[in-house]
Length: 61
Image 1: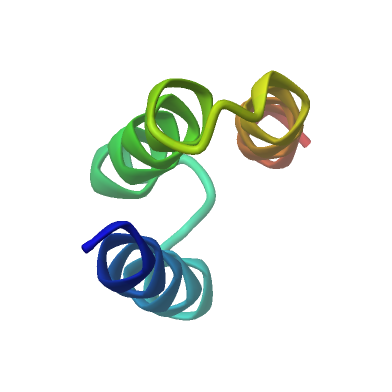
Image 2: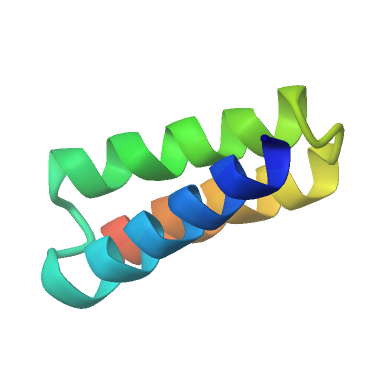
């Protein structure tokens, strides 16, 4: 189940990155949710922080 969820998140995130501006609220919300998934479910705070920071940096660039 976790692997399927991670795959679905990754596919959605890849689509959002290719189809939406970096400041789009849905793209930012997806990045936040995906980072929470990494933090809470995968137990990878480093990956979670990296993903969230990258989304933030992309949005302010």
